[in-house]
Image (cartoon, rainbow, N blue to C red; front, top):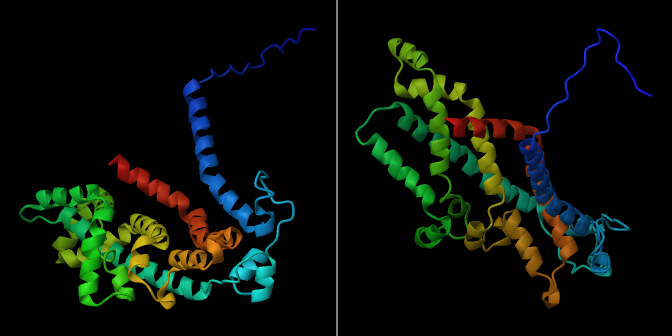
Length: 305
């Protein structure tokens, strides 16, 4: 039986199949799977008891999920109850570690964003001898691996007597970074010069123009830089691990390492460790869920200039 279209009815043309678009979607799907799978395994391990962990290693989800691992790392269960669940009885001072992470991250985000914005504005708008050469030399610092700087930074901090202190932990990061200066400079170059020239005619100086015109017009890129810095510093482990030896100053990543090292017989408490790790990534997960689109748009803008 043949179905004929009614006279005058419009026939929608069949869209051609695009192999490139299909491959792009496949690539995006693979990237999403590779990004989400580790988080799912962290959550699955956190919801599984240590005794059932290896028995159910082939399963994608535990048969009897439990929140006991979260309770015991938060110190809501007694030592005997934690050991009965297969844990070591160790806990993490989450409130203290979160406070330290907030101080460590907050100080660096505020000052690094401020200093980077001031440097980027100088490279974008001010005229002084050797400006472009200095900017080029500054950008070459992006090619220096960070690990190379750990030893001289550690010697400097030790000489200053800042070991095991907040100022010792934040000092190497509190100034500007080459990426932050480059990122903001690209945006400042796109701002209309007419607005700044009008302010100059009204008698405004560079400092006034920066604070009253440039900063209010650059809230999006500044917020993006602050978010990216927050993510990086929240997860920073190695430098605070070198500097901080007092549990009272441990940020979250170092506290998790200390929790892992407290396990007896060298057998890691994987369930408890994954429960602590999942709690520690929740603030960043919420931040990226709420503001992730703004970060992507600002990065696309900066890369297109």
